[in-house]
Length: 469
Image 1 (tube, one colour):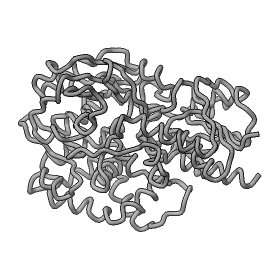
Image 2 (spheres, one colour; image 1 turned 120 degrees about the horizontal axis):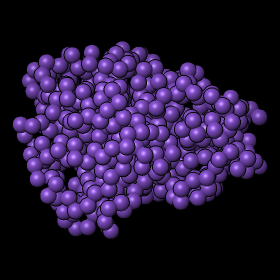
Image 3 (cartoon, helix red, strand yellow; image 1 turned 30 degrees about the vertical axis):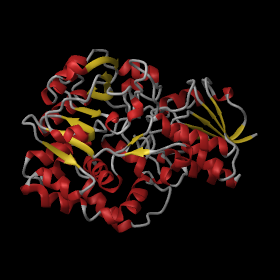
Image 4 (cartoon, one colour; image 1 turned 90 degrees about the vertical axis):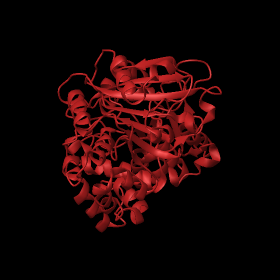
């Protein structure tokens, strides 16, 4: 009998398996698709030689993850590549605000009236970042805080809505960039704890940047899988699990799946009926014949580029997708340009380009024209660079990854108390009604992102249970 079976070979499932195998437990992973990866894959979606990331592309949470940093993933081929700028937010006048590794450079891009305010906001947390991120990403109750005072101060700053936090800024440049940071998790700007979301992304950039993985996000998953194999773990692909009886006997079962999928497989009925899924995204992967022709020079060297004219436009787009059930006329966009630091992703002289905008859950329309109109505002002539595009709306994303219910790439709404208390109101969020069944997906704390911490935290609950039995 195995000690643990993990269902789903995304970053969280693989991390959970690795953590258990490192502690001497026998582990097998079962994945429905023919390769590992989940939200961290790389595929030729457009033309031969153009390697795209179907979901996650830039990894501020990955490079800062306490779980990943504790594993020897570099020995298994993971290499972080850092663009000159982690992120840029261009404006229609050809200028840009930036999120730099340097706090001073970032603050200066906001203008003199907000530079000091920004420095006072982030600088107190940076010297204690490693401890803070470990404490923040281990909530709730998987580890005692190492620095409860700093964690409490971060909570006081971040738990109010981001609109409250950005009210400290006097000019639009800082407000717009920060609104875009919140938009990465598809949360309305006025939501509970959205200030913390923006702060985490900003502090991540200042601490270690927003890199891409050489060769694509698949490199992260492949490194985890290779390490697991060396530890004696087994990985089975092309193995769809529809019920618990499909799995071999084990002392514990760990699911890197959506809560609703787990309930169906394990026969939990309506146990997760109150779990909410959020807005979807419409994603386009581009093969380009050269770099994006950004008007703002800062955007040409940034790995990630946010698109939204101002904080009002961003807020309107987020509300349209998440609350008004309509596709926005001017979508807020997140774009990533891996080729500026990774020549392996496209043929010589060509580039891959990654972009998405928010749409309502399950939306079946085509947002291509609206997204490209937005790009043309900040990069005139963009369409002339397009060699090929691969589009995916909510139905296609959900078909590609069953965890993306309705096209929600966060595997659950990041709003209200569900930001912190997911998938249910519980101090043991990784447990389920069955004492041998656990959940470790992005539907559990600390939530979305390629960081493995949900798997890491769930593994703690599992090995404590295994040692008791």
